[in-house]
Amino acid sequence: MKDFPTYLGEIGEIGYVEEVHRSLAYLSGLPTVSPFEIVFFETGQIAQVTQLKRDVVEVLLFSKERLQVGTRVTRTGERLSVPVGFELLGQTIDPLGNPLDKSKVLKKVEESRPIDIRPSGFENRPISSRACETGVRQVDL
Image (cartoon, rainbow, N blue to C red; front, side, top):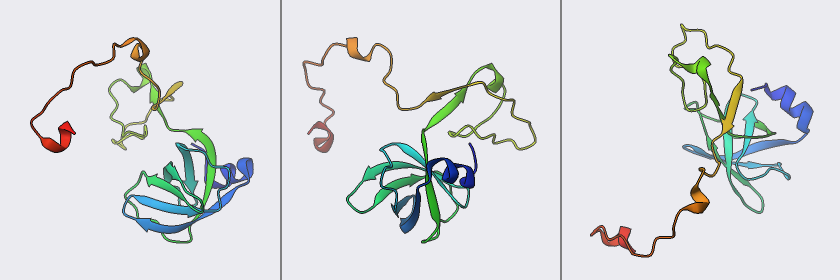
């Protein structure tokens, strides 16, 4: 990923953190952000847009560090993807593709794939014609 000034220069849209509730943040000032887009904060943290409301954008934070109200944020124009390939064999990475073992150097990965794609063969699956009952009333509803 690039850094905050680079994304800000490319996209030209800046927003601000209005509220933070654990792993959710509410942003203002990003009028053309799209669902599932990645946003980048000036602190280096990243998040994914989960909901668009009239005045605010709800995002899911991907770091444990606390985010302060008033922090600047910009769009990236990208969707969440993970690195794939033989270069990752023997490596331990987090869900965002960052190495967990800081002592090992992560090789340059050539390919990344989006995480929100439809699985192959999904369209050809038969539609379920009978209900599955678990015995738990809330689940069965």
